[in-house]
Every structure is written in structure tokens, then in C-alpha cells.
Image (cartoon, rainbow, N blue to C red; front, side):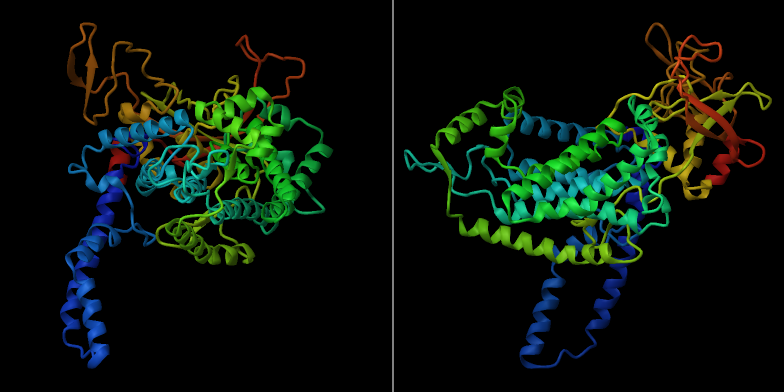
Length: 582
């Protein structure tokens, strides 16, 4: 999806973010150079104090320090945070699509290596971490969801769990029957506890944001949030409708259960008792599985399961998982050998850890403790921030979700026409509700980012809060291929089956049957006018398998027009949008 969202001809090109950050960096560098000139006029004292200041100035003025500031630290976003992205290495920012595809493919390759081998090292995880941060830095609204920093933070934790080089799953264990060292270091316990805390703050943050929100539906005396949650969540799945039509007493029970899982059960994750931690981990895993089955919440729930596994241990898993599941989870030859060894008592945890590894783990633990101070303050704050970070490098964040649940589902329906009097053709998205006969698909853990942003735009009010929509509408009128590919299809394509849509503004490339490309003027059958209508959607209760309308299939939604979303009067054309964006 990156090419259509942040690519060279995407809705919000990454180039703009990079250029803006570079301008900020150049301005800050110029101010620092002026400050250095003025600094020479000040008296640094004498003796040891002067030597200290001279050494500090020498280090800060070194070529390496200057390069670090100019190429990274001073290049900041609008929130004043540096942008750690590999795209700074691109020589031609007008041609970033190969970089976006290449980084994604490298990430898939590294993930596949770890999946196939059942193990990882620092370099594999560091590669994934840098790629994730690269997309977060230039992703704009498309990578602004809470699970993006959540994924990055967990990956950062994992860097301190794995060996530096070794890919041996036995790393950190010794064979007691031979006393031959297989790996010198045990898994660092401090990092494991840090991962458990990471899960604790995710869940407790999600619970507190609901209790402290202005929405009475989460609070005792009302407890009706789940009456509406399933119908109004961002992207329903095929089972969401059945969850929605459960009895109201069951929905109230769901709210109480949610509060228990998010406000009480997280404390079990930090208990010294092994049995209590296992209970806490299992509660969180089951809770996430229920959420996965009831809606398409991207990879959020899958990701939240991962730290919950750290509350379990190998002995618990081998004694409680069914043989088929155990074979799948520990399916690599090395893991199977490990299972046999630990079952027979031939392997035990190494008691001593290397000094360097212990030091690194301790420093990591202290760093995360320091960064989490502001997270804890936010959790206790009356106006709790949701999905926010308090350090410039975004190493540690605070999380939360669904503090407010809407009572009605609003959907934005985009329509275009060749004639101002119509007919108007509707654009259909891959997963966003539109066609009232279309059953929602199952896509989790995949994430259709444009569809989510359309839901957010419908919830957040006027279009001024979602300025990317202007460019999106312009791209639809221009019939840009990269953007059209994000949709289910182009409603204007059927009248020209041989046309291959390309993302040019004033001209169009058409593929002939012979396979050659020729450039022709803008196709006359394309859209000239565009508008956004707002509709209210409700699940259709088809207990009797009712069929409405002239289509021989059940109706899934009921929709009712609310009014015009944009423009409030008239229609928009390509020329008006281009002038507006200028």
C-alpha cells in the first residue's frame, strides 16, 4: 500500500516530510553556527573549569558530532522529534517507490528467516526495527496508529533478549550430562520483566482511558458500551454482526469483563508467583483471541498476544499444549531436540551470565525505567493521553484504545460523475462498508490503512481535521493508478477495458492489445466532478434470510443518507482542488 499512500504519486508523499524535516535541520544548523561564533566571546573561567568547557566544546564541534546533528538530530518533524529513516540515504527523493518496495521486501525476508529458523539475533531484529521506524517516520496519518509504536517498542525490547550473532536456539543453555557449553548466556531476566511491564502498561492504559473518558457508557450505572461497539468499530469481520445481536445482558457482562481484564488482571502479570503470572498471561491471550474473532483490529491483538507469552514458560507450554499445536509451535528440528532434552532433564539453565551481557541488560532496564516515569504519570493523570510518547526517539510510549464508543456508524461515501447532473458513481473500498449487500471480509492481522483513515475521518467531524482527503479526491479525479489500486476498483474503468491507468495529471497512458504504450489526452469518459456524502449504517437483522432490492443476495447493512460531507454546497472539480492545494 505504500506507493499509493506515501509513494512518489501517493496521497501524502514521503518526500514532503523529508523535505520539511531537512529545512528544519538546515535552519537549526545555521542558528548553531551563529551561536558558536558568539560563544567565542564568552569567558569560560580558568583552571579545571576552563579545561572541561574546552573539552566539551571540542567534542561538540567535532566532524562526527556535526554530521550527527546535521544529518539526523536536527532533522525533526513538527513535534520536534528526529526522523530515524533509511530514506535519508536516497539520492533522488522524487523516486522513492523502489526504496519503499525494497525495504518492505527486506523486512519480509528477515521475518521469513526468523520464522523458518525459529530463532533470531540482534542484527535480524535491528534490521526489522530500523525498517519499522523508517515507515513510521514518513508514514504520516497512515502510520499514526497506536500499534505502530507498540510494534517498534516490543522489537526494541527483543533486541536485548537475543544473542548478538548466534542463531542457535540452545544459546544460553548447557548440557548437564556432558558439561559441554552450548551457549554461555541465559536469557536476561530483567528484559523479560521489562516485556511483562510493557504488556501491563498497554492493558492498564486501555482500561484507565475508558474509566476516565467522558463516555458514560463505560461507567457503572450505564455499562452499555458494547451495545454499540461491534456495529461502530472501524472494520467489522464476518462474525461481528452475530456479536452485535447478542442480548443486552450479555453486552453488559462484556463491559464488566473488559474492566476486569484491563484494570485488575494486568497486576497478575507482575506477580512473583509463577502460577499467578501464568494465569494473567492466559487471561490476556484469551481476551485478545476474543477480540480477533469479533473484528478486524489490524495486527493490534495479535501483537498484544506476544508479550503475554512471556508470562508462560517452556515447561508450561510442553505440558499443556496439545501435541499438534506443540509440534507446530516447536516445529523446527532444533526445537524438537530441545524439547526432548528438557523433558529428559539433560538440559538446564546456565546459572552464570557474562558480565557484558548482564551490564547491557541492566542498562536497558534502567533506561526503560527512566522513560516509563512519564508513562506512569500519564496513567495517573486526569486527562490521560492515548498513544503518546514522551521521549524524542519514541523508544517508550503510552497506549489506550476506544475511550469513547460511538452510538451510530457514520460512513463517508465518495461519488464522482462526468456530468454535474449525474449519474454519480460510487467508489468501493476493499474492506470499508459501502455496498449494503457486501459481507465484511476477514483480513486481520492485515491492515488496510486507507479504509481505517476513512472511518477516522467520518468520526472526527469536518474535512479540515483530515486534510489528506483533499489530495485523495484529486487523485481519484486524476485516476492515479497507485491510489486507485488501494480501492476495490475504479468505477470508470469498465468502459475502457484495455486502458491501463497511470498516475499522470494531464495525460494518460493506454496499453493496447499489442502490448505497446501510447500517450493520449485525458479520457473523455473519466470523472470531472466529485463529492463526499455521509450515510448512517446499521446491521440488517436478517433472521429470516430476507432479501431486499433487485439483487439475489441477503442484505447486510441498512443505510440512510445523513447529508453532504464535502463540499457542503456544489461539487468539486480537479481544477478547484488543484487551486485549493496550491
